[in-house]
Amino acid sequence: MVAAEQAPDSQPQQAPKNIESEIWGDIKPFAEEQKSSAFPFQLLPDKLGNYVKAVGECLCIYPEMGVLPLFTALSTAVQKKAKVELYTSTAIEPLNLYCLTVAPPSQRKSPCAAFFLNIISQWEQERKQDPQIMREISEYKANKAYLDSQLRKATNKGDLAAIKQYQTDIDRLTPKYPLQLMTNDVTPESLTEIMAKQGEKISILDSEGTILDILSGMYSPLPNLSLFLKAYSGERVDNSRKGRDTVVLYEPTLTIGIFSQNGHFEKIIKNERFRERGLMQRFIYSFPKDNFAQMKAVGTPIPESVRNTYSERIIQLLEWQPKENMILHFTEPAKKELAAYFDMLKAKAAPDHPYSSDIAKEWIMKQLSRVQRIAALLHLAVDISDTISAEETRKSILISHWLEEQAAIAFGIYGTSEHEKRKKQVARILKCSGAETLSKSELLLKVRTLAMKSQELSDILASLDDDHNMIKFEFVDSITRGRKTQIIRINPKLKETDI
Image (cartoon, rainbow, N blue to C red; front, side, top):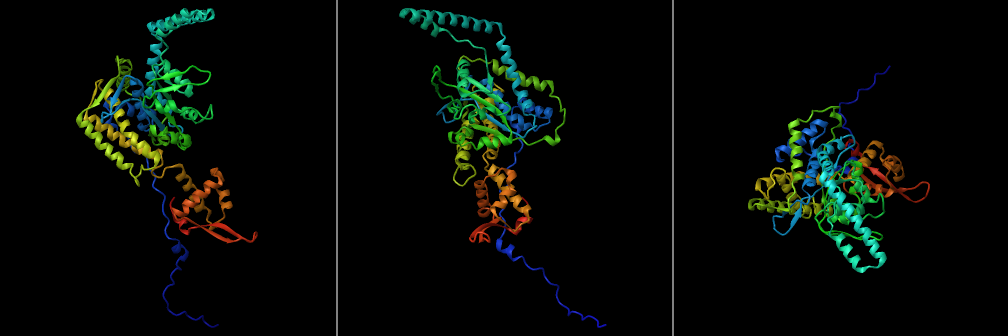
């Protein structure tokens, strides 16, 4: 047997280069998602901050869940009792806020809202049952019914003098209605009538965000948004509809404090009518972290002293009944703080900056007014007086920075938009397919669980090509049709890319 020849000594062979991978170039990663950071509780007055944190510990949720419900409670308690003169001395604004907290299911949103707002509901019920108030309402109803009856009789007789006299007497009556501070499932038309009976003020408080569904067209195809737009800043509203009496609100103020789940919010924030009319730009937002994995059946009870301190302060604000609106002013040092903050806001809304899109720019430029409202609310929570200090203003500006971050999440400024999420989902499907090429019809089958239409997929693929270098479009000869067919070629580096 002949021995096999020994191969001559040689260098070990190098693995062949992946020429195709080098031709493709690097994949451009997605924008890093903005995460919700911790709220700076040390900036709240101690009595309020301690309660918000205690609610979080009691419900085993992140305490950020309670920040906007706290603002809602304060706004509800002082509505139409105080205003703030803006630091420029060019306008005086009400202290109402529009607040929207967005959280996943099973985050105890309803119990959280109840901890902050039940005290207001209880106080409202006690006022309704006050014997003197009940007597005044009863007397008004009886007098109104009698005069209406006499007016009808005079009208039937054609007695012009009596008609004039009874109408004058009716106009002189001071209307008395049962107190209502809060509502939820209400149409714009009904809300106008409620506010007319409640001193042109009301709060919409809802743990499900139903009011946004109503404004999206739950009960009618094109609901009237005017009241929600104008009552934010106390502008006159004339509600004249066929078959109804004209209702005029001269200076209405509306507070909104609602919760929404993430999926529901994604639909709402994309509502073009809301965005074009500026409704969503009037809200402040909060995106508390999901604490479901660490949630316990029973949390730490709220200390009685902490609970009582919060309740007593809210009741004190509810029972505060000034003869006319208190006008709060900023000290001169406080005005300087606000002027510097305005310069910061302008810079953030400049072209090529994060808040330069139309919707984000409008939100950021409303923030100067909001921070002054928040400063006034937090001041009144401690001291019912008319002067806001520089220190209080500074703290409110720092709170406003946190609210800016939350708005960035709401408007998808840092890669958290629904479109970005959908792009990532498609990129993961391409990565997991293991294929070098796919036709669009093949990919549509793979993304069918995403309920994605052809046009949306086309837009996403264009971005994965132009913005991320994950795919390229090619035309190849079709075997069956005798003409060119477009295919999607996948960057081989996608397999090793973390998405």
